[in-house]
Image 1 (cartoon, one colour):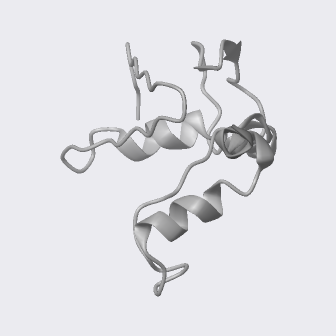
Image 2: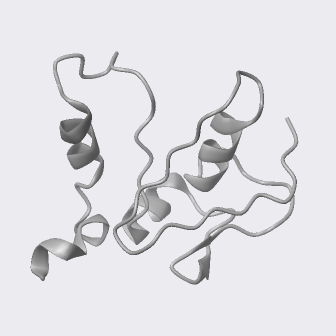
Image 3: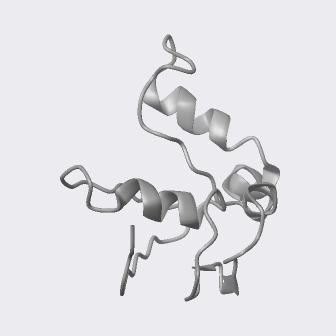
Length: 98
């Protein structure tokens, strides 16, 4: 899969959802942003820093989380609960200190 000229922006504490037909690169994009897939070229900026090529662990530590679609992992949890689980990193939830 090849992605070209993708640009997403979310405000502070923002959430981004991707919708579209199967096979159009949504999962590939999210895997690249979250460090599960290494891009061959280009930049992925998060909080002003290029995170392309960083490990998934480092990206989570920087405060960016990826909550995959589906409920197979925790079928009894709500969407909000799954999002909260993704924010276990203190950097992913700085608004709690405010």
